[in-house]
Each structure stands twice: as C-alpha cells, then as structure tokens.
Length: 229
Image 1 (tube, helix red, strand yellow):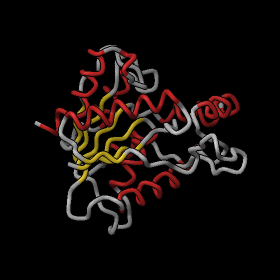
Image 2 (cartoon, rainbow, N blue to C red; image 1 turned 135 degrees about the vertical axis):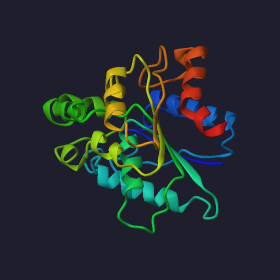
Image 3 (cartoon, helix red, strand yellow; image 1 turned 120 degrees about the horizontal axis):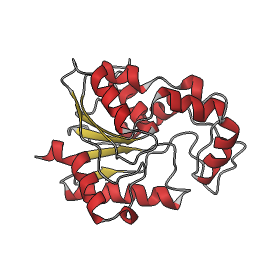
Image 4 (cartoon, rainbow, N blue to C red; image 1 turned 90 degrees about the vertical axis):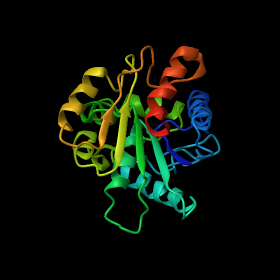
C-alpha cells in the first residue's frame, strides 16, 4: 500500500519537533502495512535554514495544492494510494479530492489529523499575524498577508468530500478540540463517507515519542486501523 503524507505548516526540514512528528507517522504507517511511505512533500512557504526567508514564497493553499499534485505524479500509476494529512495539510487533501482538473489522480482514502477551524486560522493569519510570522520562522514556515485569503474553510470542504475520509485528533489538541470534531460530525451527518474517530486520550497536536508509548499506540490506531483491517 502507498501512503502520501501531506504536512502541515511546520517544516520537518527546519524544525526538530516536526522531524519527530513525521518520523512517528512514517514508522507507524509501515507497522500497519504501508510499504511505501512518501513523506518528502514540501510546499512553497516551507523555509529551510539554507533558504533566504525574505525571498521565499509564503504559504498559500493554492501553492500547497500544486506541490501536492506534483507529489502525486511521482507515485506508481497502477497502484491506489492513501493520503495522510496533518493540520494545514487537511485543507490540501480536501482540495485535491475536489480538484477541477480531472487528470489529477484521486486518493482512495484520506486520513486527516487535527484540522483547524476557520476562525482559528483567521486569528493566526490575520489578527495575530505579526506574532505568528515570528513563530513560523521557528518551525520553517513563512506566513504573510496573502496566506489567509488563499484559505478555504475545512468546514465547507468536508461536507461535500467524495472520498472515504477519517478525521481524528487528540483530546489535548489546542488546534482541533473534541468540541470542534463534534461540530464537524454534525455538519457531515449525511455524508456516509466521512468517519470521526474518538479523540485520542492524552494526544496533543504534534504527537511524538515523547508523548508516551500508550499515546503513540492509540494515535496510530486512530489513524490507520480503520483502513488496514
């Protein structure tokens, strides 16, 4: 089975935290039977230490979707693939599912961890942009005034998705609360393709091995068990 990982705004090439996050995902995916895991997708707006931050493009949804389309083209043509997306990457995954270009291959399944509500993205990318720009530098992400206008709400995209999708988060996730998952579940009650797993007890937005063995185990089950058994 093939798995394409679509990252959030944090760049694992620039942040030790996000390196750990995606190492856990890749390892657990293989434990659940994904023999090919593609985890090197990066978006415009992902800035590494060797890049000139000021001259780098900002993070936008359209730029991220284009990067994801290129990543899909590198996957085997004759085999289905699953997308696992985190945080901002959840928007990218849903945009791919409804992409107007019918030549873009669709994932057979989407696994979405920690999508953020539209109001929170407004806070990050508009109200608190000055502070979040500086915070973004630490995790290898460039935000600017064009980031938020590029974004569509997860709430509107998930309602109409036509791909089998599981949505999950942790009960300690400050970006995707259990209450938000309940709200999304109510929005999608008529879409039988969308499944919401119970919040993972003890899990925060960025799950690493430092979260503890039980949390990591429950996290992996929430992400992968639905598709593998």
